[in-house]
Image 1 (cartoon, rainbow, N blue to C red):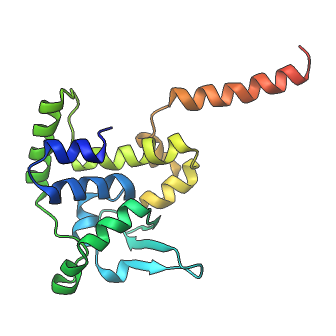
Image 2: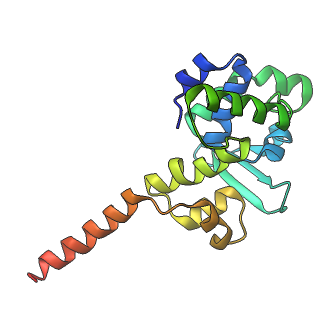
Length: 176
């Protein structure tokens, strides 16, 4: 996964960098970010900021805690919300995907990057790789159940290793 600073170096449009990072840290699809408005930002009783909205595609509610990096992007573009009623100034999906393909070429990445790739990266690299349960990832992505989420989730070697360490620990306690 490219780092934020690397994206800024390779990218001619700072807005594109901000949007891709926002996709990466929220897991939202392009159509959901495009329609994101201030009413979708909710603070819970502990003061934590959440994105709560029905997905454009499925109409299923997604509940996403807003991580600090995503919050800083929302803050950077808060004037847009005041003027347009939308939280972010979104480029068209075709243009964004075209820029991402250009970035991939420059970086020597042999994968078809798109805004939707960021959604998959959120599920795998941000959530599952850091121990978030499949059920919680499904809820954040707005999936009805985990069967759809499993298509997003690659089996991560590090998770296999962690699970097998638990097995090994249990077996060593049995003195086998």
